[in-house]
Image (cartoon, rainbow, N blue to C red; front, side):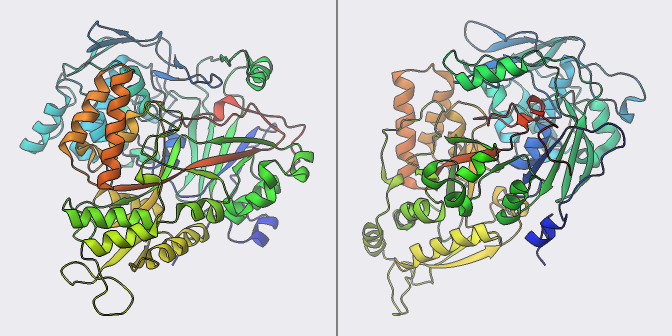
Length: 602
């Protein structure tokens, strides 16, 4: 039976069906109300593998660095580091000073004593990703940082089948003293500070005492140094954060560009305000878009990304509808640093492999997918075609780049299929494989109305070239686990940038990332070489040439069909102050305020 959303019907919504936490008694609180369109999985950074959980952990755990909230282009700045990192001339040794006087949120694991943040907490946090027992989906990405000795420590635990030795010193990851961190890398990495930010909320400091105290239940007991702490959690239904009473004194500051009038106005209004400015955050899980939209219109949500099926109503001709503008709602519209894509399991006996006929099959499927119609009809014009894995706003992205990845050409798709033996042998209108076996694709999907719309277009596009499609339904978090384990044939999902480094997008093709970001399980020696080289050279003509070659390999073998880069239409209520949708990170709840004089009473 399909799990019911927090709001099951619009009638239930208007009758007060919204899942709402019980606020504590006392003065009126400033409560930010949000909705996720898919369920979270838990809040242990080393075990998190979905965006929605990471949005929560980003407000609980703090890393050394983060992005300025108003700077465009984004600018890295210290969070719990005293300053930007120092590095050796060869970019292989990096040193960071941790700020003194930063404390974890109070928790029984600390036995009633204040617990100060130390350099050792960052060493422990990163080692947790390498511990095989944690089965971290981000382990390959952490090992890809190239910290000297970390992979060897993991291999010893795997080989000897012994508990992971957190006390064993790793040359590439050391606390030189209570407040000094040192990283040593196997190869030069000029953008190592950016690499730390790529998963900045995941790499936030973790106190060892908390993990020891809660063990396998650590996901339900996140304890960090950030502005919020977990107050209530009903799995797949409700998440409540409250202001962290132990949070240090942090004041709002930012560096908007001189010609950024909106950013300058926000800075003038909020500069010097103590963070967080709100008391609580309440997040309900609402899978269906209609109740999310109705909740926003009725004032029960403070922000919403306009669901596609309501774009024509809310954004006629791309402008905010007059009735919404009169209510004081604000629109922030931008091309996202993200992509929506379909991946092919390269280990699958039907669509995987590197032989000419399998490559031709994937390329034909890519050509058959009707991306123009997807943009015009399904996405209501709220996307642009993707030509490569590289995301807008990131290094390596070239808006002028064009290749087969962005083509829709069913005639060419049919010709490819015919040429490589995928023909209809029995006259039923559908093609068989070259060896005569049935050709049937199994597309993983979800059962919500939004997914059904995409499925209908996919089925129509592929049947138009004689390919049979069967859809396999499941819950998104479970399908994500299956994808990482290589158990799905095809699946369509999206990804967004956590930093502005384009190399992050290429992790999806890097063989060391199989089981992590490389859902397709793609293996290609030359691509791995390109990925490694891109990591260690400075921006310039050579690096751009390597990015171009990587894009062409991606299009030639088609382990992924990158379809679109989405356009975000973020609407906010007039009482939400300071909201600016981030380009490539997840934490902003502590940076906004609620004007209670403008918010209608509940």
